[in-house]
Image 1 (cartoon, helix red, strand yellow):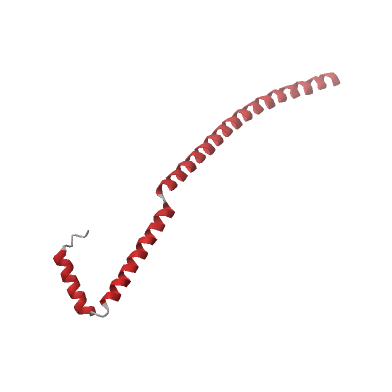
Image 2 (cartoon, one colour):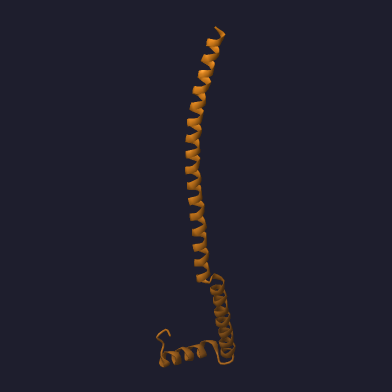
Length: 110
């Protein structure tokens, strides 16, 4: 796993036995085992919560929604520009008609 062979493990065990003592060594080994088990359980929970496949699917969904929104806004702005251009043309023609009506009224008044 870490490149530790049998001779290295024996040396580590002997040093631990000397430093910790034979009475506390089993308790230490149990505590270390429990800690490792809890660590593995916690990492599995984190992996399950983060489930990378689900996150990627959510991101793709958000990208599609954003693209739809942007394309809708673009279409809306294009249609708005066309509508404004038509309104400008209509208002110009209405101004011309109004000016004709005003000049006709002035001529009628004379």
